[in-house]
Image 1 (cartoon, rainbow, N blue to C red):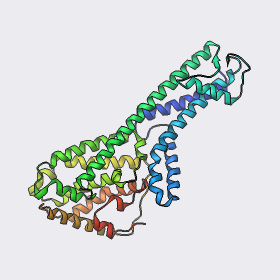
Image 2: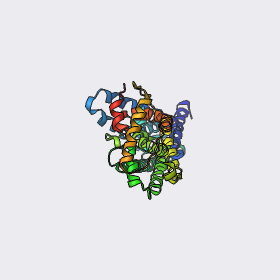
Image 3: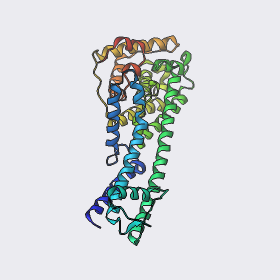
Length: 361
């Protein structure tokens, strides 16, 4: 085996290792170059979207599928080039057509390598020594295995994407389509009776945990962005974090202590923060600048939420300082993740006073 073939074998092993870490090991932040390639494609799409005016949201919604196609393409190309480097020195001798003259250029080597990796096969070139026969057999096994693994991986990614969208829609419906956590809390406890709130929030927390783990196992989910902001992870997480913060900082603890201290509320808060942290750590996020004091924004938002709760017959015990402190702990995560996916804070935080009071650069 000469130097060119050693380079080819090393290249194939490199791409196979990346496929293994991405598809089988399946952890966010792993992989040799898939994550960097995905970020590059996202940066290209993001740059194109900034030049597209009113079609920006549509172009960004294409990023996820484009990244999937680009990733599969670069894996296929890398394996084919690696196999071609191994086959090229054997053309005309150990690998040749059944009849006629044998071409020995690299393009022919790419064609032969691609055929050997393909489960369909085909082509006039065939191996004529034991070593090349074994090479072609290994190539065919690699091609079939990679194809089945990638197809299975894509099924899991799109299944997780559907579950994420279903959860986001569930949260939106629980707010009566307003995107306001105060409205959601009011509907969980009509007339101050939170009879089924614990079980409802437990179900949401369970689905949220599955969504969080899906993003940890399948980082491709980071790049699937939809035109309607209700499907945004940052908006869904904002609503749930605001909900749990309102439960702790607005409800009368003497009357609603069971709900305030319930495992469901604590799990929901913790899991929403973990989901945002997963995206923040593994996705190219940005900090959004603001021109208005966050204290003023929190006060306006809290006052509006209290009004909604009182109108629903829910007894409150205001603690504006607790609300402001807790929100200041998790809101920076939202403000990094949301804009990175092309959503403005006015699409994420839908409580009317905040939308009117705050302006962002």
